[in-house]
Picture 1 (tube, one colour):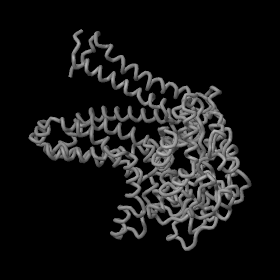
Picture 2: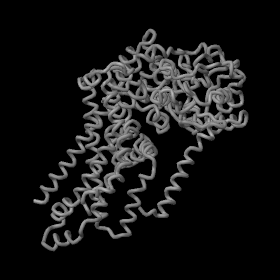
Picture 3: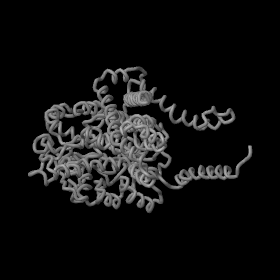
Picture 4: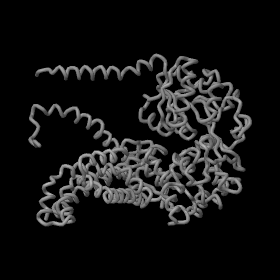
Length: 283
Length: 343
């Protein structure tokens, strides 16, 4: 790829996008920051009281940590199931790859609302999982899956899976097969080849997948509130309640910035871990 | 620079697309009204019943903006006098918020030919009532030996371990909790007795969920008792769900859905014709039937026997709440509810 700087005559081409970015992204973000600096919901008194209220409250810290924990758990679950699938994809021939890609993309074509409500049917007391558990005699009563963190992570794993798999398989499909063959020819076992050759080479895809799944699951308001219910309080619920039900825009803005900043911090951490991992694995 | 014919065609195409985008506003000027309508069954009902009636009677086209009450207020506040729609459709809480924020044009009930058919107080300088909602207890008759009698029963066995509870974020949730609190000894608008009882039974409650998910959770057997309006009960029953509406001993709660003209609305005359159409007897009668089950407010409508009243005048004896008192406390209640129920 040509990484040379854009020639001077072409920079005007970037103007429309830059302008759109300024108007539709940077300006609203600035407005969000300004709104968070008001102390009352009528937006009349300027000051840091809303921030102080949020940061001094242990409940909001717990909500923030729970939100990030949900993201980490979903990333782990999608990774655990998604990575082996990506390895299988890499080893498959073109026909199987096309079929697998179709199966991976299919859920994306359905609205997330539909997928979420489908999970109510699957996880419910009379749902598929509980019917199977009871028919096999594993439990005399239905397991409580809906309105629990476990149920939420289960459904988010399926809902977010394409976000993990698509970057992962696009990186792995481009991987040079000769490197794997060379590793095997040099006497490395299959596992050693997987950890020393395949894994390091797939790190860009892993980082992209983890980032997408983390950002998407921490902000998945619909799934969180429908599957998780109101006993699991996450930041998107707080933002929705404060902005749309009680019109306390400053508090909603503070919660939004906290969500944005903490998710960004984690995304940077994931990228840093990816770089370190690549170095470590190459040694 | 050499002009590429393909690029020229593309530019021309883009320009004509841009011109097309302006067309709806032209159509708008000829005889339409943009009405905010709740998404889901309200939107469907208004599309299939109100829109054709308005077109037929007044030649006005109804364009709908599917928005919940809270979203309408948020959008109108953000638009600052240049609203995205001509009429609001609101529940009492958001109605009071909108009045305080000055989001309505002054309303003149005398411009409606159907205003005289409404109960006293249903039309004023802010807007007009277009539908009533009746809130009580909904339960699955196959899961309990006898129906619950009053609000306090929801926190007692056998009901509490099958209860689906929602918080203060909706109108029906807020008024139901206020009535439960009264059943536990509250005087007036006080939610402390409710929270004190909630603490005792919290681990037993089957579901504490998002309001929008409650009908699905009931249908899936996650909970067998909840507070609900007659509309939800009617809709679920029509789908074959085992559900019955119970009038609590302390009385059925009623609140009104109202329409208002947005400040700065472009099509005020059409907006009055639209509202008048909604209040006309044929439209109110159709909206009352399944699958919509919207309780009418016009006195010349013959009431369906699924509704918990024989005559509209009974509404004045039903339980009603003062939202001017509720609104200032609601933010604190919502926050408190989050803290009390969070795991």
